[in-house]
Length: 320
Image (cartoon, rainbow, N blue to C red):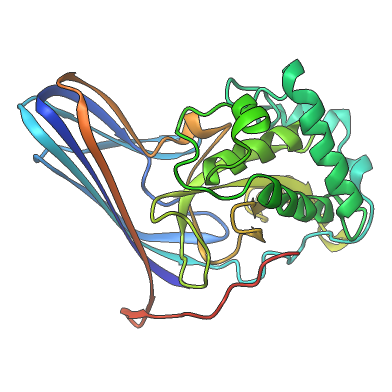
């Protein structure tokens, strides 16, 4: 699927701001499941753009040294996604929990680490996190890790309903479990990261875009979901490292989206990965001047065919 993405972020200040440094994580990745054909970023006022490659993806950055009351950042991208069948190579049936060995966990410890946002060992959270995993294993159609994760995204979706405005960017796990009990994609991703890491499933936060014409939701902003490293089907046991989206032999990275209750496929575009939201913040910076009075984000994702937009209104298949 070919997708065209336009992402516009507007900052409006109460008075002139100056001497700012800004970082952007808006450029789509290129990996085994997607190819970024083109990506460009323009800013107003005009600034010279630089970039570097971080472990999680491309980071663009720029400085402004002239007073400005508005800052507009526009990212335009064109991406081809190729994961037509996200269930391909995934073991859905056989019990494979014993493959999450101590040695495997040690090799993938970067994706099991506890962070300030995914503090799954916190005494106030451990029981709630454990109960979610127990519920998922009971509800799973088969005893496999993948089947359990599919059950888990359904449970998170039902117990923490999607509710724009119910949370903010700094909402903690404790607030989600003991107070709000609702949230948006970022919150759903943090909950799933905590549950998966608590049982030794390596997983990472993904920030990106979602083509929503199939009835999916992303709040017309960037989307977030979780990729888990899970055992593959038997026929991939001898594959060389790197052939399956950078996964070690016998394993596959697959995305799970609790907000939409689906396994991530070709409607998903990855931009940045990290341990949690902090590693993948789309736009951030520091500046001298007045406080921000308005922050406006506008995201449009369109399907292209022969260079022309395609409208698709068919409902999406959700997992129940």
